[in-house]
Length: 560
Image 1 (tube, rainbow, N blue to C red):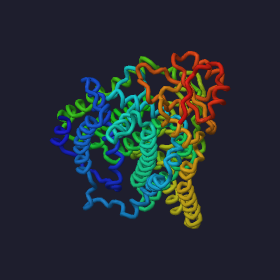
Image 2: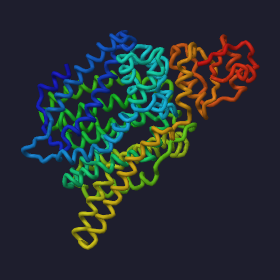
Image 3: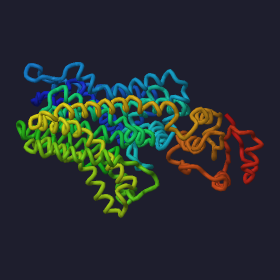
Image 4: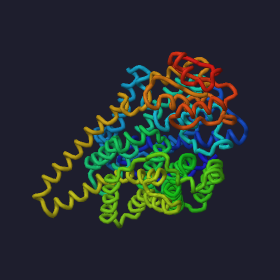
């Protein structure tokens, strides 16, 4: 109904220099929002489509039809080439090159054996996210009755898993699917950040080529170890989804404000953020609110108020389960948790904030640009306020992740700030223009070279602290799902990763989550004694296993 209402009202045909490249991020957010909305609605009516391959296919068809309508709406806002000069095809390739690099790595990975291809994924929080995907698939819909953790991304992966036949008893297949999906998720982070930077370059007055370079540099910077090598390797998937939401919605406000498209995308982003990470809701909420206000003011206010209220009501309806679960079960005090290190690229954050200040000052009359730039700083301000509220340092896990998002968003302002400063210097001191341009060019080349190399360690085992081949072998052992403890000859966290992953084969309602981390023999013995059916999963000789776990001599041993 809302889709029909949207087509009956005039749409603002505002130019977009990036064309189809600029619509990719919004389409992703609209798709993810539709998946979440449908999954929440299914839970409300008691339909569980994700627990069956065929009902999942029907669910996917429903979502696809909805997204197709949104795509038609996106096409309705294509650039008007008669009045606006968009980027050339070569310039668009330049903007998309960093993201394409990640896609090429993903394609090349399929020439590797499966253990080598997925080993980077068997690390950090990735396997915990995999358990949440398996829970959604087993439940058949998106429910927060048992666990309050927000699960927008997990619902989409669960849908893919159900449709393709992965998951369930096939944990190895689910690992493979989710590793590929998560790798491509970061490609979306890179693409949307590049698009935001390029659009910001156009907005401040750069020509299309310098703007494309600014976008390409920002995208390349996301592949450096301080971003890709930290958050992808650590498995902070919700932070990656949140980054895409912020980059896409801020760009919509910047390039299409006043259009129904911008409000739809920002509303979808708000819905996704509500099921991803609520600490960033102030940014998404302000973006959606301003997009809605601007849309109302751009035409017949009464008709548009009805549309905005209708879409807002749908977003609120679909967001309430997640928001209520977090408010009741978690609360703000949970932000004091400090058991995980979330590195913050402080130098990049400082450069980004300085660049943001430069662009805001030089283009202070552009209200919408200033508004978007302020929103890029808001996560950092939220970090400071949150840290003060719960009495922890800003480098503690949750405040640090907020700082990381401002550091990431700040990349979008670095290129435009450099272009504006170079133009100013060239006008006032022409003799300095050539050496400064050479320095900027060298920095861009260095950034590009580093970006081309940065994903390589991920596919060569440098990120992982577990032995991929051993983990997959143990997961495929008959009866592995009943294991109480795991002991293998794999390196470092192999046993812990295997043990956590096996939680995906247990019912969410009755499962007692396995301890998160490596265990001592005494801790493992306590688990075995507490289990009504103690089982040891191991690839070591049975005599060694019996000697190690003599505390429970009657424990069953399972070998791959």
